[in-house]
Length: 509
Ligand SMILES: [Mn+2]
Image 1 (tube, rainbow, N blue to C red):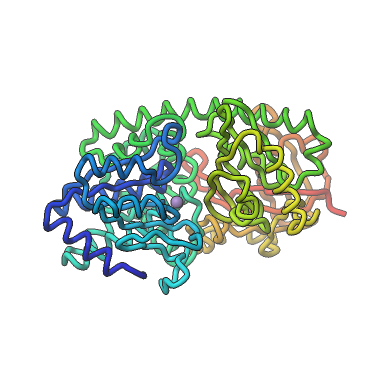
Image 2 (cartoon, rainbow, N blue to C red):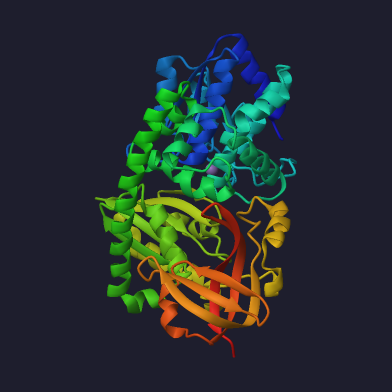
């Protein structure tokens, strides 16, 4: 990776000379895990290390002059950014003015000018030959530690065992593609997580009632990541780092309980914001039907929550969505996009209207003056017209292959398991099957979910459709249906059985 030698040399000098090092992260799970692994490793190597995570509300995203001022006051000699910093040209120059060296480690998209740091580690820099470009922020930090392990002649296997579980949590939480090197990291990391010795991860899994024998990428995405993220969304993101750095089970348990209760509060506010956004879309239905990009703003929306709500709205309407939380003259927003619409590029095209922006193809953040929101909405929609057509708004369901019911069994499930871990860019295989006869129609969970008994004339199978309960009234015994589904193993009363997980269905033509 470009500049790795430089970075390693500078960190080793800091360890040797007992210089003060500050790790500066981001408040999401990727940033929190990155910070935790760097702090732990450097402490164990005998370094003098501090860390800082910005407060989302007070400081906002990324490196600020105030962080450099803190370094100056605290006599920090080396500042290492994790999961941020790639656009901090001014701040790095400001640090240099005080003789503070900076190492940037990041995985976000690069703008034209890069910070003049001692070393910039980011596989996405145009001239970095590192072959795998999709590492998470924590993946880049992990690479630095791997190189340090080598340079310090430490045991490589012990290093992997000690850190790969935390790296996996950050990689999955940041929704990185589970291909190439990420796949290797995550596959090994999930195995390791089942027997982790990290008190924080153990406590969090206990708090989330995770079955330690059946951990998948989904366990991390739906049970662990939201709880760690809740700290940065609602409260003090340091709580997440403290959990991951906890040295005793007691300390870890206390942090895990706190995170769990903050996460519950987060869920309540998220639901409220989502409902408010939906009613705004309803009120001006005519305008929003025409818009390709949904831009919604409200005074006082919780800026830690708008990202998740934007993502729910994008899922529901299959349109890019930007939610803005206004605080008087300034508004901060978070956007999510759909395939075919690069949000980072779209924001770049509106750059003249924005005070700040950054992010990726499918998710980005922005800050602008509240009075410019209306113009921004028009501008981004005018831009969208040039690259999106009405077809892009039709939700698509990618189907891998036809699977006869005779193959819908545990043997197939076990064969497919070699393809795991499933996630971004490596989805759980999707099958279809046509002309199945409905033998039974039921609902579960107060009518919310659908359960069907199906037959192809030879084999009978149970199918479950979550949130598809409303379809029950359209189906009767002896209806003929085509289904799209995943195949999964389900443990019911101690017995492992195959489960057909419906993704979509229609009456056969
Ligand atoms: Mn990240």
